[in-house]
Image 1 (cartoon, rainbow, N blue to C red):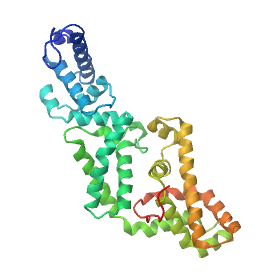
Image 2 (tube, one colour; image 1 turned 45 degrees about the horizontal axis):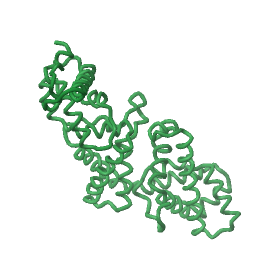
Image 3 (cartoon, one colour; image 1 turned 90 degrees about the vertical axis):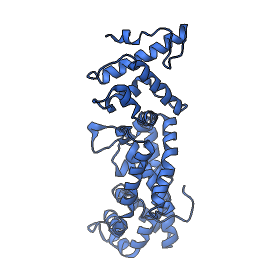
Image 4 (cartoon, rainbow, N blue to C red; image 1 turned 60 degrees about the horizontal axis):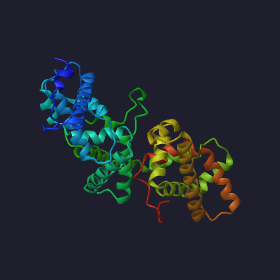
Length: 335
């Protein structure tokens, strides 16, 4: 039986209501497009009369659940199709999926701004609850929100051949909220289990900043200002804005290039380059202020110290950013 014959149901729309003229044509076109996308994605599955209507109905209902979110119907059906069990009638398998949640997830993976905003409204309270139940501080909760966002929304640099966000792996067989909760709980446990590494992390950062063979000037700074350096750096990182911190983690820790960041944020590469450099300068400026409060040294000596930090900051940043919950909250508001 051909696709055209399966879709030939003159006088009815996808809900079964009697329609005429343009409405009838639009309904049949939606059904035909949905069915074509499904057949292209799962050619081995049996096509039954009414499948086009069922698919089109799912698309309409899912889109209605997220007003303003933009996602092409064919793209959504192509994402649904691989998740349907092969041993079940297609209509029954469709009914078992959280198709509305899948619609939002697909739009987020595609970078739709309104979808990402809706996703954030789901994520924040879920992470807050998961973290607070295990005693995370407000600062740690903020960091965990960024970590979970990155885990779910950013492509994995370790697998460039699979350059997709982990959210693309959401199967739709449970609610999106429950899926986020699993990730949030796991990241909370991982973060709160690591306080014993704070000292070694600081030592690693100091070793990167002040290598043993760097000469007598660096050795002098190491002996006299080591603790001040540690506190100033940690305060500087904790004082970053959310966007500055996540950009530096994506670039310095996760290894995302300027081009990959530009692709993710849907902006020109010069914009992401400016953002990353701005975040880097923010670390330096906040470190200078923090050191100035602690060291009380002449401006010329502080300038000399900052030149050293500037020259080695890119080596030190990955270690400073690796332990997001270890940094103390700054006394001032985030910049």
